[in-house]
Image (cartoon, rainbow, N blue to C red):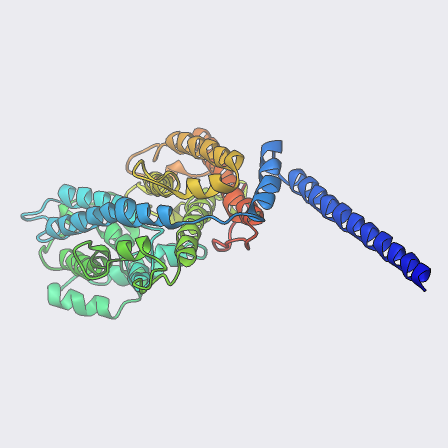
Length: 425
């Protein structure tokens, strides 16, 4: 009996040793195959190594995002909303009495400055502020299907020719959201009405100021200003539980918007990815005629974000400045780069290079061949711009691939969708 037990023990021992060896070999083989598959799917060996190393690193570590959230919430984001509030007040003041005490040129300059500040806070539509953003800038909602406002909404705006401020406020109360907001204000300030749309206006286009078309502009600015004030108040550091503080303290039980630091980091990351997606699909591919397989021969300049003021490319530069601030930490502390670098220094270096290339390519685009006709900036007929636009699209595509797919893969999370996109890469 003892001999039989010994034999059985030996057999069981060999069985378990063989099983352990098989299990070990399976783990090694799985990791090797994962490394091969990932490296084959990316543009260079550095990216492949980053994913494999990140996969192994994630097995034993997890990133603490609090340093990133504290820097963004305390240092990086609040000043952007202070600037937005300042330029909001300036826009209201500059359109108080258009073509009388306020010149058209000063109102246009105030709009340009404010639009720049608005583009710099575009990714931060957090919590209760989302509803206000949709009224401030309807383009962000409609960019895949139409301009904002489109021809129908512009017709509605042009029908108001007689009346004072009260009449104008009643009129816009009956209009769709797409007919209002920052783009509608741009239209009145930078374009003539009707068949002369796209032609630079003068004070002769506001003949009955402060009534008529000037009153309509004033009504639009006041309604828009109220939405902006609600947003900037939510970020006011002297207010009660401002959003910046909630972001910085996410997960400690006092944040009404972010119940955990992980949720807060996801909001920042998904906002950054959505920003890049809108830049690529809505602000470049569609107006350049490169969406849906287009080759640029039929541009849709009427779909450009700031098509009447000629500020469409500046909008992109302002967007990118904020993405850089989120990613780098803006020199005041940790940023998303620290998150990426934690998992893969190589991937972080790739993003740095892509950002530098994107800055260069956006800088190569000129707003228009003729200052009075921004539409000439788009399409394959403008060879210099077209090359720079296509290069910018490729840069944005690569950034989106890294952040939305490669980073998600190496951290073991699901891809973050920034919305549907075009295919003009």
